[in-house]
Image (cartoon, rainbow, N blue to C red; front, top):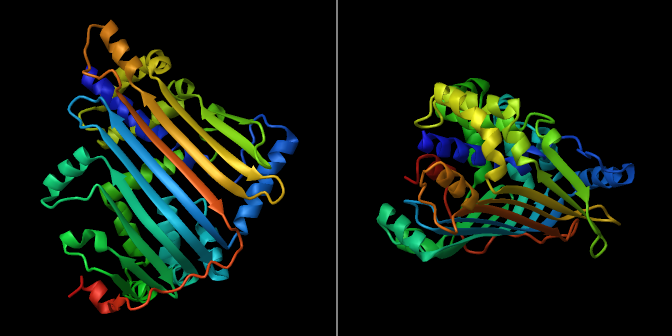
Length: 381
């Protein structure tokens, strides 16, 4: 029973991890903010929807420490570079904004040319990089059968419907050293012409149990206003000409709510929670209101909005789970979960945007080795 409770709590964390995404709704949630503060958020949404070029630097950092049978892990992923959108690409992005994965697939199935327009109209020059602790790199490398670098980066360029990358850091894996390119728009166009994106094919993909479950959870979490009653939204002190808005989630209130019980019950009924049946959930869910205040789980976010141009210059979100409280709770009942003194999980995202509206000067890399659409579609043969 104890192991099943831990499984249920882990599922709770996974669901809560979509907190920041769930708040990104079509409308602007203002909570108890004043009319003037709400107007800033509304102006920011309107201003950002008109941005066609910008620079962005996003960092995703995750850590796992002190869990029994799990190696400590620290993973940092960074995506930094410049982006430029054409009018057609912006129209497609606007058409897909706020849709669930299932709705996006349906929309592209009905209008496959939209995906081609998106590819042709997006220009990007970014570097994707990661850094992980050596212990994790060694463990993953052993599983893969080839050494995994503890840090690596891959520059990527998308321009004029072509996709370019340089995977030289993975040459030991057999990757080509230097720039490689492929005609992405042509590949997408051929897929559309072959019927791979038609509604029937999309429906068949959605019917696959794994795909269906992957879509079901975001669909539930992205329900309009689903989290609003558990969100505390405030305006903090202004900083460097920017208004700072903070959000936090009432975790205990959410875990005790009928909505959360329904989400977990649906997951259990689908078999997505390994080793936990619907009967187990019915027995365990009443315990969550008592356990929730002792979880040590905090979920917070913030936005920095320019007071003159209403651009969003920084967005951050933090999910931090200090598991000491859970270990103490188990100890009170005579159980030992094997949690270390520093046991915890964290996931932190920080996105800095700048250079709005400027010419980003994105160009194709020189001397890239180009693949044909036929080579890509045949797996490189």
